[in-house]
Image (cartoon, rainbow over all chains, first blue to last red; front, side, top):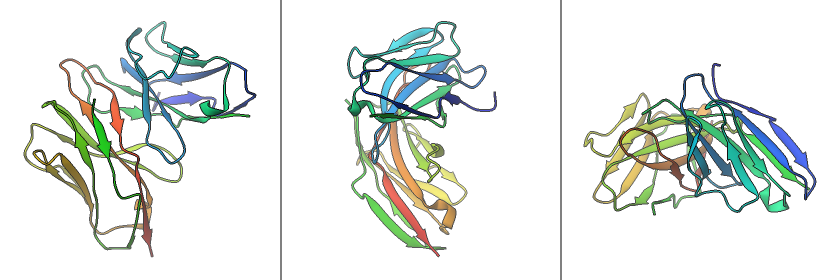
Length: 113
Length: 117
């Protein structure tokens, strides 16, 4: 595709529900990153994949958060038993193998009520 | 751990003027990159400029240039001839560079720039 795409763009869910956020990276990009951005803050790293391998998940806040990228392309970030504090913009970025620049998607704005 | 600090939360400037956004960072590593990202009201994240730590020459992209002071761990962004479209949040970001691939970005809290007509 022309750029990184994310779906849904907006998600409102009730506390306690599970949500799945999808990221489709730029074609050919082997590295994929997830970030979370609270209102008025900079993005914070969550996790990173190289192909299908999750290389770093040190930023995932707790075990309710998980991510996968089974075929080395599309990735899903899942939040179980959502809480109000999970409300934020969730951003995905991708880069080429050995690439320095990360290209960001439009984000998914998650609101937990 | 690496940290990035943007101490000015907000600035405003008149159209056509020059403005400088400040950023400091902390790391014990020697091989890294620094970036400035722009986030307009649409909330996209747009790369403005990047600097390799091993390069002494400051990066320049049209109206945007940086002042990279490695010893002082300072990385400021200068916007010349400010335009209304420059109104946005600006984020300074740091990335360690390991051989063979990209690494996570560490962002500052951001600074809101308003360009007034």
